[in-house]
Image (cartoon, rainbow, N blue to C red; front, side, top):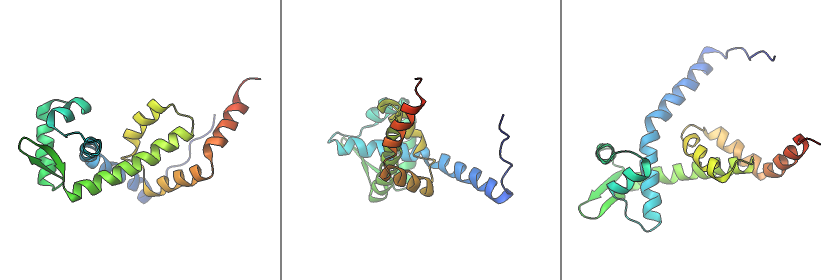
Length: 158
C-alpha cells in the first residue's frame, strides 16, 4: 500500500481551505446567475417559478436569493416581466459558463458520459482554480481524448 504524501507546509495547506471556503460562499450566487443567463440566452423568461423548478428548491428560497442578488447588484426584477441580469450579473454568468464549458469538455475528453460530465461540471466549476483550468485546456489541446481512448484500450482484458 502506497504511503500518503506528507502534509504540505502550513501556508499551502491553509490556502486550500481558504480557497474552498471562498468558493462555497459564491456557489449559490453563481448557480443562480448562470441559470438566469441560460434561460435568457435561450429566449425564455427567467421567472421565480422557473428557477425554483430547475434548481429543485422552493419558490420562497428563490425569492430570498433574488433579494440578495439584487442587493449585490447582480439581478433586477421587473414586475410582470421576470428577472434580468445586470452587467455585473452577466459578467459573473459568462465567467461561470466559461469555466463550466472547460470542465465539462475536459470530463468528456476523459471519457465521462455526457450526462455525468454535465452533472459533475456543475459542481466542479465553482471550485477549480485558474491554474487547473489552464491545465485542462492544455490537456485538451494535446488531444487527451485520444490518449484516454488508447489508455482504455490498453486496460481492457485481452
